[in-house]
Each structure stands twice: as C-alpha cells, then as structure tokens.
Image 1 (tube, one colour):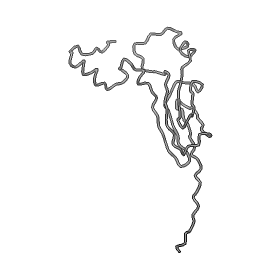
Image 2 (cartoon, helix red, strand yellow; image 1 turned 60 degrees about the horizontal axis):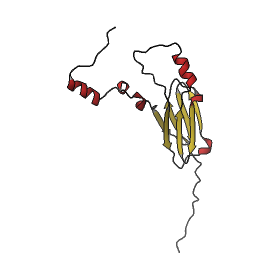
Image 3 (tube, helix red, strand yellow; image 1 turned 90 degrees about the vertical axis):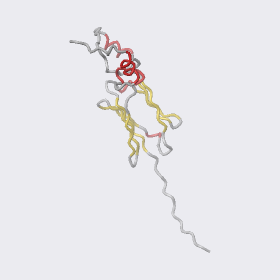
Image 4 (cartoon, helix red, strand yellow; image 1 turned 180 degrees about the horizontal axis):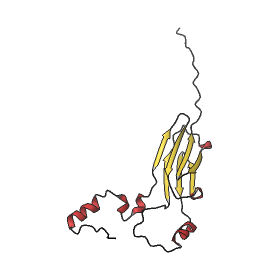
Length: 144
C-alpha cells in the first residue's frame, strides 16, 4: 500500500495549510470535535439533538442553570484503557469520541422543571417543554 504524500513545492503546501477543506487533517483535531446539533421547535416543546455515537448514556452530563442548557461528556479512563489494551497502532484515526461541552441559552418560554433526555442509536435527544401560555382575557371596552 502506497501512502499519498503532500506536494513538496513550498507555495501549494502553504496554500493547503491555510485553506483546509477536510477538517480531519488539522493537527489540532480536538478543536473540531464538537458534535453536530439539530434544534427543532414544535408547538409544545423544543428538541435538541446531538450526534454523539460511540458513547454511553453514563458519559453525559446535562444541567440547566440560569436559563442555560449545558451538555457535556467525559470519557472515563476505563473506556480508554479497554480501547488501547490490545496496543493497536493506527495509520490514521478519524473516530474521535473525546470530551466536549456545549451550552445553549434557553428562551423564557421553556419549562426547565420538565426537561428530559434520551440516548438512542448515537443520538442524544433533549426535550425542552414549553410553558403553558395563559390566554389573555378578552374584555370589551365601552366608549363613553
């Protein structure tokens, strides 16, 4: 198997370093390992979905403080020990299930007491129910 080598010319190499199309080739890949997020607004709730495959639900920490939703994950050392126990050497490694932290400011219409989360098939789904809106009383005003 032949490895593909970078161009040895100085200018194209510099341009390749400045204008990266594939973020996986960046030396500091950890900066780009934030999971992708989908946020949906429905009539009765908001749904936040994070794409985080390869983790366990015990790895996540979800908290709401001062109308800020904080989602984080920490990979425990026993998970890392199990994955490196067979001393496999990688030529290229693009799977990156590392620690992350995400924060979202919640609108005032969210009922923070009833937030719930599920983790299924690599997607963490957090449901944020909306507060019940009190209907304004309709009142007729007579003109005097």
